[in-house]
Length: 114
Image (tube, rainbow, N blue to C red; front, side):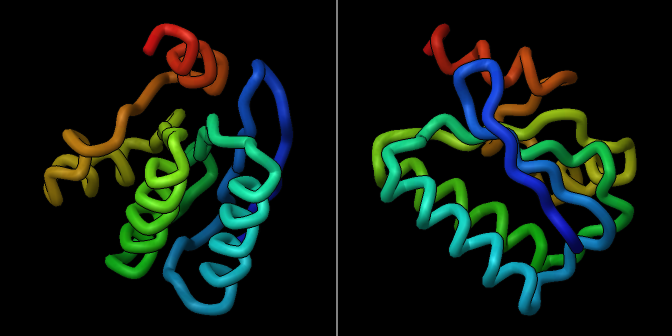
């Protein structure tokens, strides 16, 4: 897994790419989340459009990030989950935990609506 971080639409967009399976990249991801919290950037969107597969460790990584951001007073939303990833979220019932949107812009705009 690789990821990129971009600021747009008044939010931080983290685009995950490849296989989200935990491991060393999950540590880097959590370090990025912690850095965002320290900087007061608490509107976070995780774009899942380029994720090929995700296992339980990858799901745990997202849950941990969301919990961390929410505890700091912000929120983490998902955008563009590929059909396989959306099915995984439905099966695990995490679809009810994460707010998810069809675009980064919709996800980011939802922060001002809440």
